[in-house]
Length: 113
Image 1 (cartoon, one colour):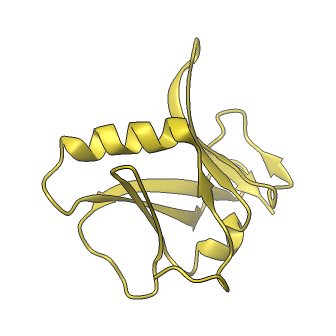
Image 2 (image 1 turned 45 degrees about the horizontal axis):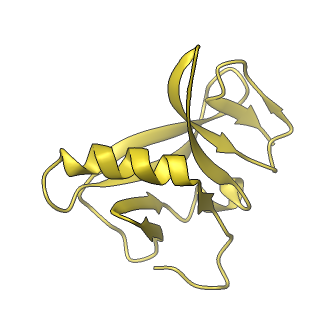
C-alpha cells in the first residue's frame, strides 16, 4: 500500500536496474523486502530478503520491473532515504542513503539514529 501520508523512500535508477535484474531470474511474484533490525556495529542494520509474501500495510515501490517492500515498523527509520546500488572498486552493494542516521559503520550496512 502506498499513500501520500506515509514517509517517502525513493530508489535510484541504478538500484531499479539491479533489483529488476535480480527479480528477472527469480520465480514470478518474487520481490525485494528491505527491513531494519536491531544489531550491527552501529545499533541497527538493513536486511535484504527476496520474498513472495506482501502485507496489506507494506510500503511498496514499483518502477520499471523492480518491486521493493518496506514494512511499517522499518519505514519510520528509513523516512526520506534513497535506496541506491553502487558498483565501484571495493565491490557491488545496495546502500541506503538515510538522512536519519546519525552514525554509520564503515561497511554501510548498519547505522544509528
